[in-house]
Length: 183
Image (cartoon, rainbow, N blue to C red; front, side):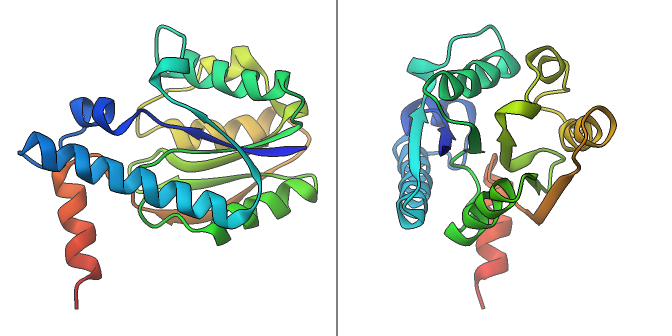
């Protein structure tokens, strides 16, 4: 009853919006490498997953597209969804399985990123409310706080937080991660 939702644009499309390298071919290859790593991690969990890329993301803005993707998973019969993107190089199968365990124990979970957003959101269908989700400050530094507030103020369950991790949206983010991981 749980699925992983990979909510991500294709490498070619992602490269248009996120410039990790000045050379277009290298930029696409970097995004493809991040996506491939994400897919490997998801496969390692052995959980069901769905990929919803830009072709399957109807909506006028990020919030609508994200909500539509979540609702699509629920219409397929899933009761729990673990949403991830493909821009967090530090994401691990352990993170996803930790979120899965929280869901199995009737808790939602979120892994915040260093920019005030999130790299993982695990939510039970019974706690999802489209109108409230649409009112989040999507694509802002306020998003993580909005989601925490949503669970702590309007629901009967708190949300468990996972370790904060860096995502990669710019060449500066990429350089920081590369420099951090190089001895």
